[in-house]
Image (tube, rainbow over all chains, first blue to last red; front, side, top):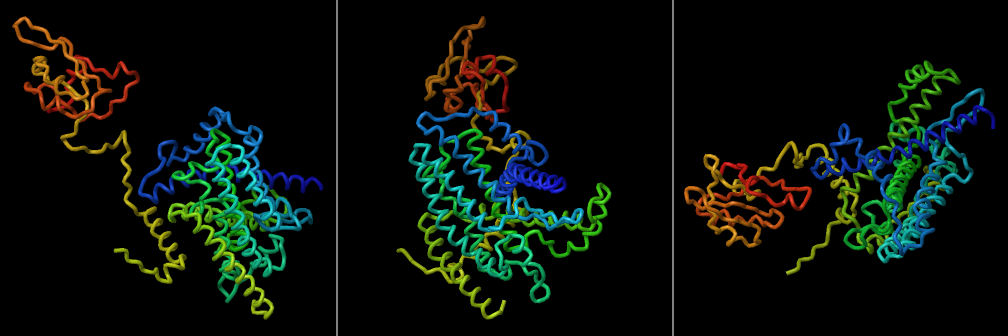
Length: 364
Length: 149
C-alpha cells in the first residue's frame, strides 16, 4: 500500500467515522423537533438557534453524569454490553460505498473503506451481532424487565432477519454479484427510458419487505417491542444510566444510519447521482480544482456530487425512520410475529421465486 | 351490542393506510397550529376566579383585618396563624399574620369567610421557594397588594 492509498484510506475512515458520530446529535435534534412539530408542539427551541445546541448540551450532561453501576448486576458483562452493541453498528458501514471510484496517478481508488469479497453477507453477518449486546445487557442487568426486553428484541431480530436476507437476494440475483459496488453499478441506466433503474422500481416487493424488516432490525417504532414504558419500563437498558445509556442510544441511531445507507445502496441506486445532478459535475469540479490539483477535476466533481447524493438519500431515509415513528402506533407482540412469519417471510420467498422465474425467462 | 365489521381489503393491505397516516403527520408538521405556550414570555390566561397567592387588602396603608379569627377557623389545612393585639384607638388588629403556603390547599374559604374583605387570593401561581421557611408568608409579605380584588 503506497502513500496515496494510505492517505486515501485515512481520509475515508476519518470522514465516515466523523459523519457517523456527528449524525447522532443531529438526529436526536431532528427527532425531537420533528416529533414535536408533528404533534403540534414546538420541541426544544431554547438552546442555540432553533434549539440545535440542545443535543450537544445533552451529550455534555451525559458525559458528566455519575457512572452508576447497580449493586445487583454482573459487572463485567454489564459494562461490556453497550460496546458490544455499538461496535457492530459502526463496523457495518465499512463495506458501504458512499461514492464512485477516483483515479489518481493511474490508480483506481474506491470510496469504500473495505472492498470485501463477501460484500452484503458481511453486512448481514455483522448487523446480527448487535443482538448479543442487547442479550448481554438484559442478562447482566439481573432484572426481569430487562430480561424480557432483551428476549423480545432477540426474538424479533431473528424473525425479521430471515425476511431481510431473502428480500436482498432478489437484488443480488439481478446484479449477479454480492459486492455492494456491483449492486450499485447494476442499478445504473433507465427502464422504459425515463425511470432510473433503481432497485425500488425493479424489486418493489423486495424493497417493501426490506424496509419493514429494517425497522424491526433497528428496534424502531412501530416495532419497538424491546422497550415499552407501560409493560417493561425501558426494556434491556432499564438499569443503565449516564454515558452507558447514551451508548445504547447512539447504537440505535447508528443502526438507523446503517439501515438507511443499505436501503439507499440496495434500492435507490446508492451513490448514483440524483436525476438532474449530472449538469453540476463540471462547475463542482472547477470549484474543487481551485483547492488542489490531483487527478481529474471532473472526476472530483463527480465524486463530491455522488457523496452528496448518497448523503441526501441516506438523510431522507433517516427522516423516514423518524416520520414513521411518529405516525404509526406500535404493534402488539403477537401481531409483530404474525407479520414477520406469516406475511413478510412468504412474501419475500414469493418475490424470490418470481424474480428467479422472470430471470430464467429473460424478462428482466 | 358489539358490531363486528371486517375491514376492507384496502385497510387490511396496510400500505395505503400507512401512506395516508404519513401524509397526515406531514400536514401537521408544516401547517399544524402549534399549541405550545412559550412560558416566561407567554402566559396561559386563567379565569378571573383563579385562586393563587394570598394577600391582605390594605386601605391607606392599614390592613382591613381585625383579627376576628374566622379564617383560621374555617381553614381546612390549618395554615393560618394569627395573634391578635389592640391598637391605641382600642381597635383589634393582627400583631402577626402568617400563612404557610406549603400547607395551603387554595380552597379560598378564608376569602369567603372574611367579613372585612381583608384576606384575598390573587392570580399569582408561581410559588416556588428555595427553603421551607420561605414558604411561610408573614404579615409584611402579605400586605404586598398583589391584585385588584
